[in-house]
Image 1: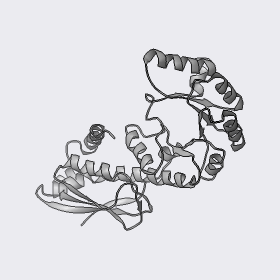
Image 2: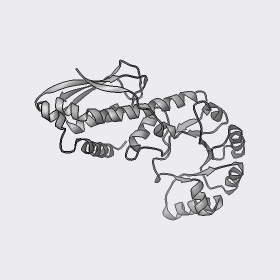
Image 3: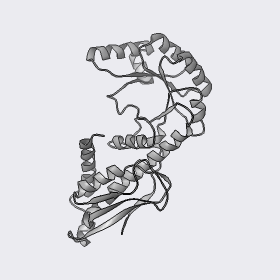
Image 4: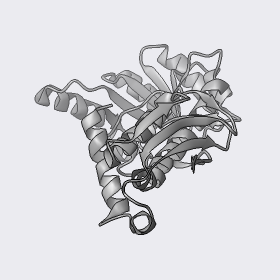
Length: 280
């Protein structure tokens, strides 16, 4: 991750939270007082966001030091301590909620991602995230997916061409959409992968006939349809299953031989991991 971008994101979040001052702390804590606080884990899961949390504390007060006890990506259990922060009590209190919000959200995403990744053990199919992310928090949410063992799909609209149903409809059909996308890349000199969504087997056949893409997304296909599509594609293009796939059905899709399964629930349907920061 680009540290300058992370710093900017955190600074905006600090400004949003602190405004013209943390008056709760300013009213009863002396600026000269120092202290320590530990990150207490209250729930089993995968820890994510420790590095980001450390940056939060240091952006609030460069004098705060962090002793990391558990690294990002590690399994954690109730009663574990993730890190110890030491420095100005005012600074610790000012950074506390923002650091926890990031840690809890990222750890929840990493934990859910790991569940899906573990469910596919024994298969070559990879778990992808989507653009169903929290505005202005996408970078950290996608980092959490990576920490949990998943793979980031495109980061945004700028790093891949994805022709979904509305693009196809507005462009005048599958053939037109693919041809126009390739012409656009040629004219602009961009080197972007092209993925196109197929809604049924008929569209899969048309995409194969047209060519000019890198990946075919099988949207809301049954496992029977997915197996048929994978056989038709025959490894000529990457394949991605998407839409309505749950923990209960995900292995059956992997058994069909798709390269990727995208799961929007990793970032938009996730429960934060419970933890707190305790003064010591």
